[in-house]
Image (cartoon, rainbow, N blue to C red; front, top):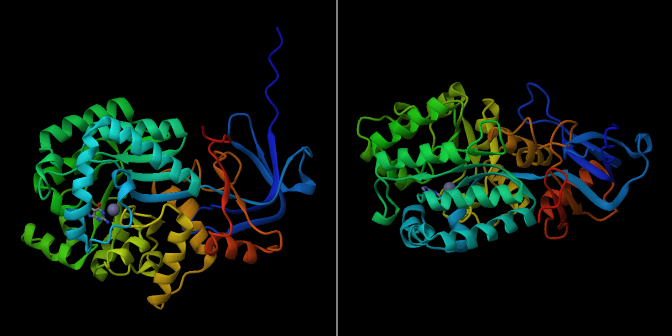
Length: 421
Ligand code: GUN
Ligand code: ZN
């Protein structure tokens, strides 16, 4: 019997802009093809990226004048905050009480969670985000819904049941043992250790967790080698309250360290008011940072020192932090990171920002070997951006892609070579 012939690869002809990850390059350099061919196999993986003139398969879908880039990675956002973007009730602790906690309580209602979950995926994919670090809510029902909608969309995600046993309305709290049972069930049903969707251990922040819950979270993450995601040192009032709630701890990071929550699988969001010692310890632990500049502006939290992290070799990704961040568009977040670095008098380059918004984000989420760059073997998670044909050089294209997202819309988002339903 003859084997059925596999479907031929699909070839997309366009300008191509991508980071090219290399060992030792925390922020990879970029490759630009002015007239390139992206060749995608029937399994949804990239076979090659080459100048079109040299492509082995000259029959192509011509996507000019679009630019092909990897999908973006949003390393930190909150699923149940999708509908409360832009509520200016900050700073942080007031905003949580007035806006966030009331909305998050609605997510124990499965139908509501499903409705918002579908919206979330549509908005992320429309903005070109194909890889994310999601906080679900403290409801295991909503957390399962987050897994379901992500699976249907075909994206890559770390998804966390939000752990809270104090400091919020009763409807959002779960005592330690119940939370551990919920985690065990989610681990068994939803987590695949090297799959597209993974369970992340997600203590909301120190103020919403007892020391016992934090320790149990650290132990669970260690036992099952799971990513830990939490907030660190976002707001000055929060920092003071944290030290008061954990007497005897020298600084904010020390709270997480004491509970086994600062390790190479830890992803800390914000990291604004850190001492040099805390930065050094983050680097030594090989922990990772979610830089959320738009959220930091909107809640008046302060400015993270991005260079402080990069100089120490700390791995960083960008986070929208919806709903404190006002957009799902990672290009606007990258622009905000640019502004923050300028204000810190320690600028970052557009090249660095593009890598941070794509491969570096995938990398901090543990998906750096599978997505985030248009290179052979990776999933074909890519975007067709409508960039005017007059932008010809890498520099010109990058300027449009990063800083003119309103004028360079995402025309198509492909996940593993497919347009999601
Ligand atoms: N700290 C604790 N919870 C949250 C949250 O939902 N958003 C932000 N930005 N910070 C937090
Ligand atoms: Zn957040």
